[in-house]
Image (tube, rainbow, N blue to C red):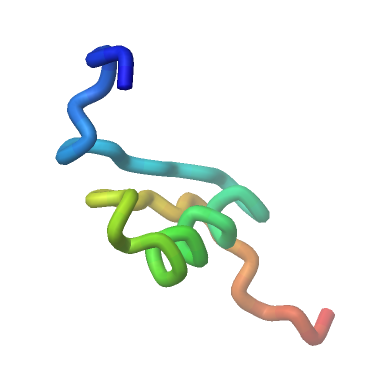
Length: 47
């Protein structure tokens, strides 16, 4: 809206649980994020 961000080049990244959230954001909001980096995401929830 303010012209600060190029909406065609928005990415997201996170580490640990943030990495998991980055991956989920790509799945659930792929129309918003064009790139995602999941650094050491949580992948094993059984302990």
